[in-house]
Image 1 (cartoon, rainbow, N blue to C red):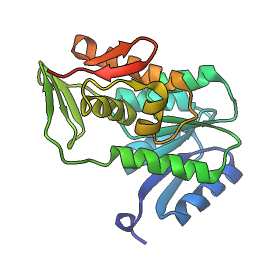
Image 2 (image 1 turned 135 degrees about the vertical axis):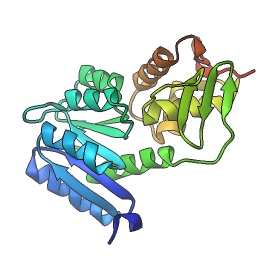
Image 3 (image 1 turned 45 degrees about the vertical axis):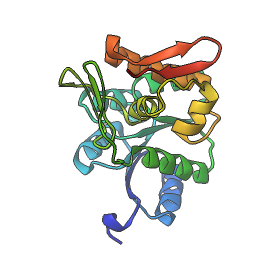
Length: 226
């Protein structure tokens, strides 16, 4: 089966062999090509060379840890969706991972079926769609090409940051609660409202004064368009 006949290549960076094998089994069953690396350095090299559709990244790894790996990829402009995996149910890790550019977060132990569902959800969100670019002053958001720029200068957003911005921009003036955004942008609930706040803060930080997202106190968020 060639990669073109599958759901794409998923890079699994996991040093626990049993867990990696289980992830490979379930993802392969769903039509994905799976490449496994067991160290941070190996995972970084594979992410650069293989250009996977998605990365499943353990936080605790030999050598380079998952946080450093994610930070390095994002600094290089690599926006491949990253799903963090960790054995610790620690909100600090979760928030730090999202702030570094992670798109999702799973805590061990988790159902392999849930992992597959999360990967499918993020890939659906990142699948390009045809739409005219949205222009607000110097901000231009090309949904079809998944490109964002300010005064012609590219702004690197992660997959989920872009999806959040695009979702709000294509529904100008509509106010969405955090729970609604989790359901519509992430495709499911359960991550917690803090996840939305972190991603909104990241988008605002990157767009600066050009950000069209406003906070509606006590309700959620909306985007304004002229």
